[in-house]
Amino acid sequence: MEKPELICGPDLSLYLWRDFLNADEQQNLLHSLRHDIEWRIDKIKLFGKEHFIPRRQAFIGDHGLSYRYSKLTLTADAWPTPLDRLRNTVSRQCDTPFNCALLNHYRDGQDKMGWHSDDEPELGQNPAVASISLGEARRFVLRHKTMKSCEKVDLTLTSGSLLLMAGTTQHFWQHSVPASKRVHQERYNLTFRYIR
Ligand SMILES: O=C(O)CCC(=O)C(=O)O
Ligand SMILES: [Fe+2]
Image (cartoon, rainbow, N blue to C red; front, side, top):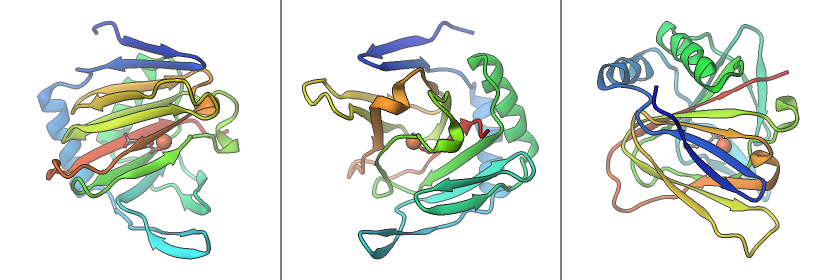
């Protein structure tokens, strides 16, 4: 496997493998994501008002795991075999275990994810979060939470890429997937995590 690109900044450590999955692997995973996953459109409460989240999502993991995410409690669905295999190759590449994955489906450029950190307490301090992207390329933007003078990091995550967010990244930085008028195709993203 190629060496990753390192993207560093104050309190930030990212590792990016742009061509982690070949075309066949991407096709097999897309097939599984389209056929084996029960996608949900969850509602969340923001400032007292209920909204549908602007994407579809699912949560898969080892038996019995659950995850609190934006005030929702998600119980893990079982791993479809191709995604369990992917979990293992991602674990090996990142040299860290993962027992669950949050899956996001951005149907087109209007679907998005707002600013947040993957800093739920059950992930522990300085969690490693590994992100696989499939389908249309989307921008993935990071900003420091407190150092306003610190420049944003603006990446494009292409199909088949693996991004590892490590070290203190989740503690000090937020990330987002902005909407884009130019994007008309779908994208899937899987973030592998380890819940204690
Ligand atoms: O879609 C992405 O690239 C990011 C997903 C994400 O931030 C998350 O699942 O917490
Ligand atoms: Fe995230």
